[in-house]
Amino acid sequence: MSFFLPSDRAYLSAKRLKQGTSLLDSIYDAFVASFDDRFGFPPLAVGVDTIERPKRAGSRPRLGVVLERSSQCLSFNASPEPFANYDTRKQRQVADLFVGTMRGMDLRRLFGMPRRTPRTYPWRNEIFVVFSDFERTAKREVNDLVPRPELDDWVASLGLGEQFWCTERFAGPPIVFVHTEDQAAALMNSSMPDAWADSYFALANRHDEFGYLTRDDVAIAVDSKENFDTNYASNWYYYFK
Image 1 (cartoon, helix red, strand yellow):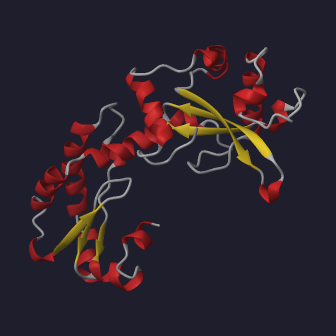
Image 2 (cartoon, rainbow, N blue to C red):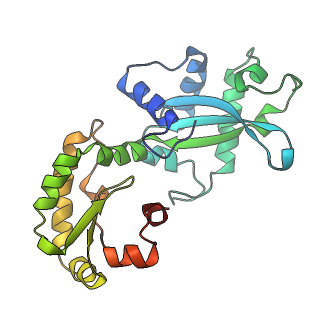
């Protein structure tokens, strides 16, 4: 159970748990309680599946742990950077907790491992533990939830006149596009993007179901059609890739 975008199935499942419209399978109750005792906060969601090893080396069980807050998720990284590698020691600790609280459970069946997998499979060494950050994706979703008419009204308030070309957004606040690189540079060197971020935060905050978004999460970038056409072949896929 890992996700990045608000449209990901695993995020939507975790969102229902956060909203209280669904419940986590009770088979994970002991694991959730032990995790809370060990780390000071419970997982929001838990999921299991298998992943294929490279070069046809068979399947490996994967345990997905969804933490509600970004700070909780970052505590399982080897460094404070958001996309740093996991702390392997903590991954092993979580795998140990999981196996220890699942005594009597057929882990082969739970993970969906092949039937030929021995019962004595070394689960603690083989379980690949991954962590997901619900808060970070929920903040991305806030931007998606701003309806286009509200966004159009916000654009009209920017006062760009004929300089304005369009706005586009992908998993974040809108990017304001003007026509030329000189126009974009002049705007970025002014105080206007900060003022725009203030007004956009006020707008987006009305759609923040869980209260995660802060003003520090909002920055309005300015780019140009000239840059889009010249360096990205006028293609949004290349631009946001």
